[in-house]
Image (tube, rainbow, N blue to C red; front, side, top):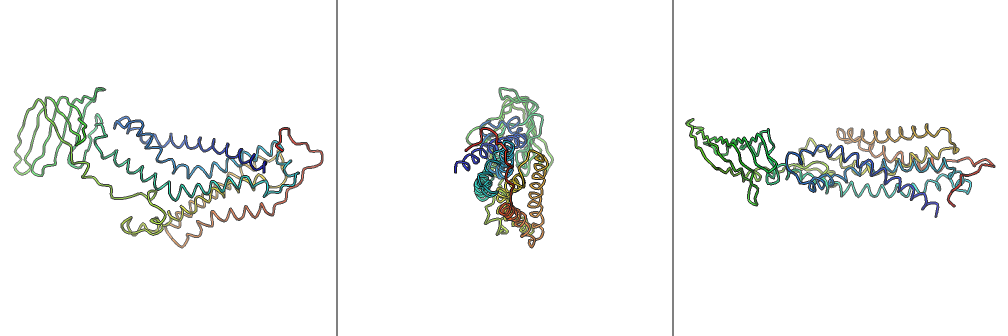
Length: 374
């Protein structure tokens, strides 16, 4: 129907604005955590943007249900204010007919939520964690931070007093304990970090090398004009051995093994798996709550604020119930049905209310606003 297409376009346009706005706010707040990777670690801007974009599916899975609810409330409240709902009701449409366009959008949001939750979130978050690990431990992509003792592995620490815009380093101290029987301390006036395809190296100029034998305590000092410290082999010593819950697919969460996590965490992982199945249903539950509140009773300009507040409170209550039941289920698996009831219950109740709801016809002589769609 033309009416359905008209309302769907309005909801989608409003929802896109809300999604973009909320995503930008979340992106700005979360990306501040990674600014030091540009300032202190020399991370290229393109890599930084890609780094944060990998978190986008995770943010969207949280934003989409809220955006759908907000867009539904906005569009139907505006239609009520412009008396468009009055005209549609007078033409014979009941609550379910009026709600049909929003239900179509909500079903699409729910399906998209399942795509994000079951596939895109674990894939993108796994890429995010892998890139984060590589940035932190792949020293060919890292610049030494000035004024800080940089731990490069368990046995090598590098201190740089200052770093010039040209890349020259001044006031370099290197503590190298990779040899079992010798502890080496190197000091230099200046130098540079050399990055090549093999391994990173620190070039030191005008300094000395102090080596202390750990068995005899004898110290030997060597003065040099140029000296190179190879930092190779440090990256291979650090391996990523654990994975975050968000990196795991639904089958791994619902059937955790000791290769994934310790047995005491099995309940927590299973609760996360069931949450992946429940959370997308909020994309249908939240807009339905908004529809019931907006379409309830006679259309009137009075009381819209109270309805809006009531809808927001109900939505917050449902989200709190879903989140709270997840934590309860993590501690006691027998409480898992509460998580499903928290999301499915509002859907069934709202559909029942819409199906049984009767709205009063507009009084004779009531004139619709101009510009009402045919």
